[in-house]
Length: 173
Image (cartoon, rainbow, N blue to C red; front, side, top):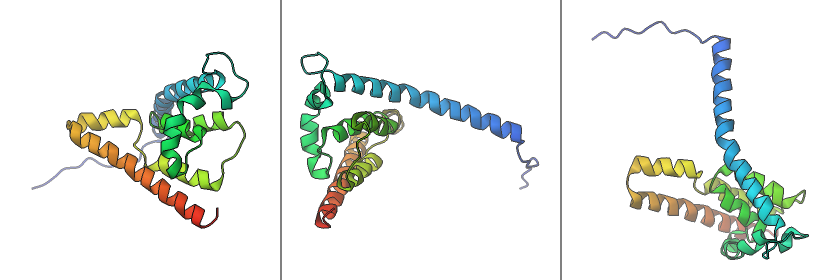
């Protein structure tokens, strides 16, 4: 058994740069739409009151009203602030939008360590973007397995964030 292999060559710099530029443009094209849409919708919701009139402060906004129940559910995991909750929900559509949303809603304000660590754990351990979830569903072709994987990722992120929150509180941070 003899296997013939063509001679291996290093790609030229021009070819490497062309491929890198094309892949970068594809990534930006894929990410730009969800990030822009999420940020625009959230900015609009954070400037409208529940009566659909302009509000003076995001604290009185429709977005804060909509995040009430999810914030209560995420409070044990250290993300009870409505702004963190809105960012996490957007992060389920595209991970990049979690940071963009948080920057829009915090508007220059910082996070406490006891908020930042659980938030980062949730973003990192929660399911990937919605496109990856649909691809996973297409590949597995099993809705029960897909649902179990989705719930497992949500539970793992929530549990890790809740444990980190407890540890930070025990340390007094």
